[in-house]
Length: 87
Image (cartoon, rainbow, N blue to C red; front, side, top):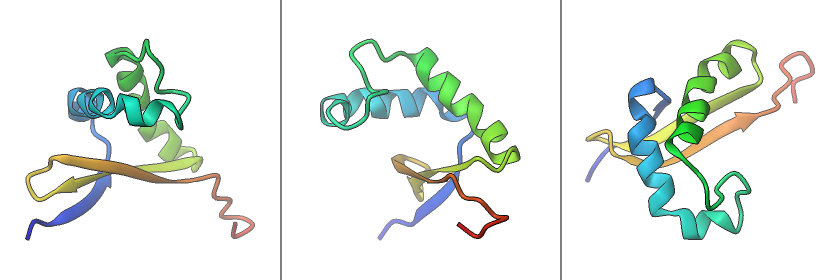
């Protein structure tokens, strides 16, 4: 059995995330407006590179789900959490 871990995005993830999106583009495009026909590596780089600022501003906490070999299995996150109000 392989370990499943969650971790923060890293700049070195850009290519693997891009490939995962392209591999799943047909399934994603119906549900995720950002996954359009012209989706590019630049879109992936923008996303990955924006994650530290989102954390620092307490706006969004994004994670990659990876196996024990650090292969991307998916992603998850917490959005719009307001610590001051507990929601």
